[in-house]
Amino acid sequence: MSILVTGGAGYIGSHTCLELLSAGYEIVVIDNLCNSKPESLKRVSELAKKDFKFYNGDLLDEKTVEKVFSENNIDAVIHFAGLKAVNESITIPLHYYHNNITGTLILCQIMKKYNVKKMIFSSSANVYGVPKHVPVTEESPLGPTNPYGRTKLIIEEILSDLYISDHNWGISILRYFNPIGAHESGKIGEDPNTTPSNLMPYINQVAIGKREKVNVFGKDYNTHDGTGVRDYIHVVDLAKGHLKALERILRTTGIDVFNLGTGVGYSVIDLIKSYENINSQKIPYSFTCRRAGDSDKCYADATKAKEILEWQTTKDLSDMCHDSWNWQKNNPNGYIE
Image 1 (cartoon, rainbow, N blue to C red):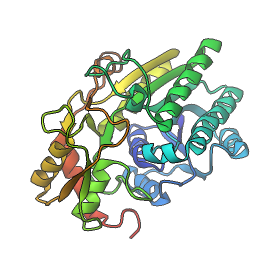
Image 2 (image 1 turned 180 degrees about the vertical axis):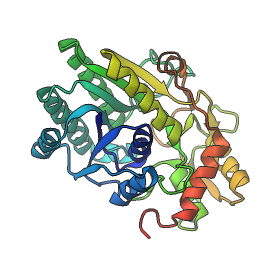
Image 3 (image 1 turned 30 degrees about the horizontal axis):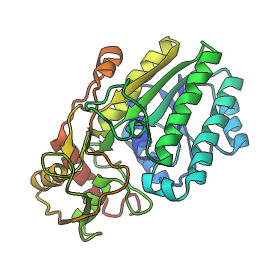
């Protein structure tokens, strides 16, 4: 059984590739390496002690996508590929809409042509926007506040329409909360190509001496310490959620949405302090102004995933902090030696 992983060289993609291989699946990866490095896949192969096919290509390139399907007997697709920086999406929205949505349309058209009708889509808690109530359920109102989140919601709607048009499809939409951490081996982790847009890789770069301090955006939120509260989930738990979703779509049809989170909210300061305590690393920080569209609190109700996918998280905040630093200290320059 062969699973196509789009964006498989990226942070969540690489961890999911490793879990798939460890579970006995064959994989094929396509990635344009715009925010990832081929070294991540080399290490996945070493850790799993298995080889797999890799295509250095873009979903916007229809001929390359067609080549992947014509050369391999694909059974299902896990679709990670897409641009994902919230702030960047605000400055170059057309690029985000074109890349994320058009790439998905091309992928779906070729899947349909080759009669591959099983997909897991990498969505985001961003689709909820600023939640009116927490924890957030899959039925909570949707209202993304930035172009990145809107691309995710538009793709969700496209996939819903696709299923309505043809009930032979089996689709799982996974809405991630805030993935952090790294594989316990310290061999694969988060290595952004540019200035990190997420909190944990920024903390890591402060810890390793690449950056002076963490900028904390806002200290007047309606939370226990005034900083924003989020649901941080270990990337390995998240990767295992994809395997559970895959098991389900391979044996059923339909379209379902699942929150993947821990159900626990931690503030920015909670995360920094936990990181300091677990790793004995001092993380200087200073407060700066809020970012537009940031909410006070956002954490998941993941009951549906627990009941239907039989999935739940096993790693806590201390594991996330320990594994993040373990990755960074073993790879001070990321995947570049």
